[in-house]
Length: 299
Image 1 (cartoon, helix red, strand yellow):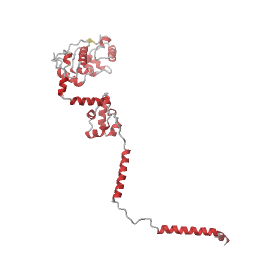
Image 2 (cartoon, rainbow, N blue to C red):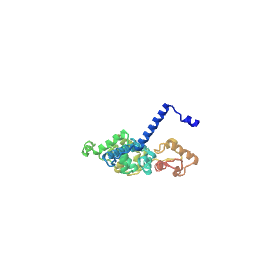
Image 3 (cartoon, rainbow, N blue to C red):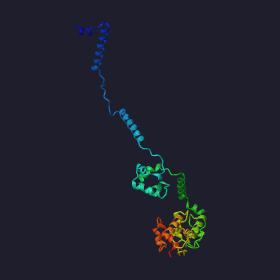
């Protein structure tokens, strides 16, 4: 009894504290049990306020999704890589066409050129073209070309030089004045054509006109339309087995390295029996073979 009595023996202050604690517990339990935390009022899901709230949430979600998308900054399409092209939506074939074009150290300088090279669809082009950024000089050039195309033909005729009457249609006998009748050829280009013709000892193939430095392809095509090789030129040939190094270098299609390789091959075989043997030389420019042999013979 003494043991239990020690646990239940309290003074007046302690009894008052215990009494207040019991009352507090009873009040809290009653509040929880009898209290109504839920409103009987039902929320209308199709009310304007709720719909406006959902619309705002959707708008914020759309903004967040857009912000998470990879951003495309202005870029030069000439430097599109496999990875970049795939991100833009280009196919591997379209990317390979561009890379093959750039491999020849060529550049696309307009949206039209880009589609011509890659052959991308109009829909894809319209989506990515706004991000193309070409060099300032290319943009200026395109504007000038566009302007020139729109210039009134009467204005062009007004400033066009008087038509010169051709002295001949033989490309190997044409004078500077004859060449200047071709649109796009002035004093310098016509002089350059004459000098190159002298270096070749005459044009033997029509396509040799494309080799004139600084001559645009469209202008060269117009030359071929106007002038023809009526008589093949008589070219002075040299014996490949006896020619000196200096003489062989005069061949317009042989540079120092090729000349050296030809002499090394000649020493190796003692004598070149047929000019076709030259094609066996390492790194020999096969595409120029028909031009190189114009100035050689094997005796």
